[in-house]
Length: 254
Image 1 (cartoon, one colour):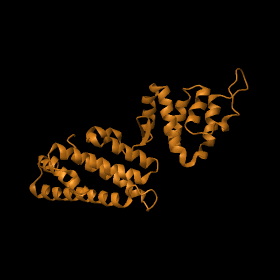
Image 2 (tube, helix red, strand yellow):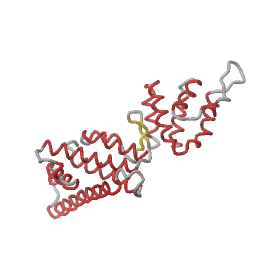
Image 3 (cartoon, rainbow, N blue to C red):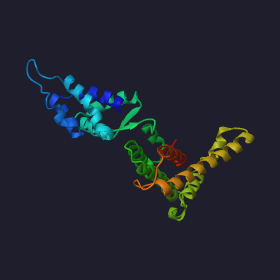
Image 4 (cartoon, rainbow, N blue to C red):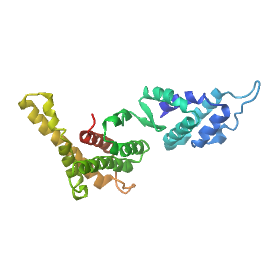
């Protein structure tokens, strides 16, 4: 997040001294820490550079609230100067972050350019999973990741007349949806020799089935527990990747 601040603070200079104070205050920064800095005509006043440096010195006071500070700050900046979005996003992308709907999202967690290849019904839940993970809401992130897969399966059940998805388990819905779309069968288009394609298909189907099982089990044991049960962060991170993979294999795009 300190690297994000390096980019964001550079673009803060596009605002006036008073606007910078107002923007950081709206984002949760204690404005009283800046009260001694005033811009004056002539000499003796503080510059925008002095102001940003002072904010920089006190950012660690925010601790766990720093992520929320950056997101609100970026939202407020773009609401006032939408023309900053392209340059801000380009600069963040070089550091492994990206903007989506004025939210700062780590690319390692989810690349928003992948949305074009995924079932549209799952977009909102996938992004919600990423944002919740970023903000430390692990159980919520897991719930949203599973909901993204649910959205894709419900869409496929409807389009292919597969019956009532509520009558099947999470894992069963995933397997049936993947079979209906026929993505595994399309592997024959690779023109591999039969001795190569047969075990590959079998292992791919097995992997997807295991992803579905893992998500099903994690949802039952770790989703929306609100601190009542232990949650392992690496497993939640992987669950978002598993959800993205399953949705991708169910997608009619790409």
